[in-house]
Image (tube, rainbow over all chains, first blue to last red):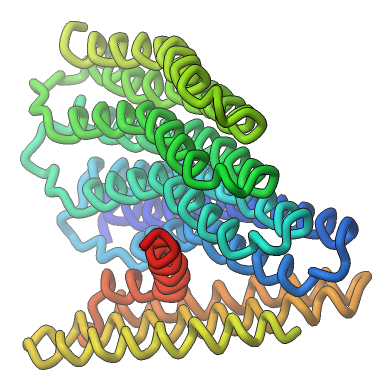
Length: 325
Length: 124
């Protein structure tokens, strides 16, 4: 076994560990939040403990999906067939795909726990609305999983694309940057989407007759929170598929590409959460005053657009780092 | 808990029936590894849900240290089981890895589809 093959195997194991290690954080926190809310709900209305328990179980099963995505990637990496053709790029591919999936699962796991918790408390308040609450929770939680799915897609593309015809320098940095852009970029959107879905479940429990409006505004708000995760995926795709000129031994071009990924990934966290707050508040107040739905939705969208601007700055700087520097 | 038993009775047989149907169709269409992978993944998804729904009420009833140990044990067993299914998919050509991975979400998908259909019926 040559040195590179050994390092590629090491990277596959480390990547697998990172994928599952980071990936377990979000789902565990989300499931714990759901259980904590279920306790509060049962304390409020012990007669419906069975229904609350059922809601918690279904919510936790969905919140766990992000950890299962991470498990899939971890197993692929741990049992990866490295072969004798491994290069230094293989090393970065394994590390990057593990990081991408692990980080990408954090936001979705935590976010999915919020609607599950709110549905448990809502079931205790309005036992008659249990079915409607669970449906709303499931839709909200499913949308929360989208950023983790983006990270899963990027991880798979990294693992199954042949980069061997590209120059090692700076492609190694582009590969790492791609994983970080999607992985970090998914955190904020997952959390933000969860906040919106939480408010929607609370709203359905507070005002059941506004359930349809609340679900629709929730989906609109969640769609906007997902945009920064899409920016992260866009930067990842550019980094993975753009052909870069060989850089010899110079580090600057490689660092520009790595920085582009870090810039977009970190830059997407804040807007995702901020847009989540804006939509959470709008959905919450629509439940109190359905007549103001149009004004609240407009304010929500304008607020989200402004919160999004910092994500756009990050996208612009990332694109400058890729195409200009 | 009767409600939890009801959940198990409602979703597990449906997930298995759908997986067997999809698997059988794929096997007939000469996509054996995909068909077998979906069935294998679904079986482990059901096992995961059964253990989760069985262990949670027991953990709640037990209380204290026993509850924590039982919860951790349940998580460990469930993830080892799912990792086992993925290991089979990764190591044996008879099973398609991605089909096994997809099958692991069968119960979640059946829960989601069931509630969406109910919501659709309510609207109609």
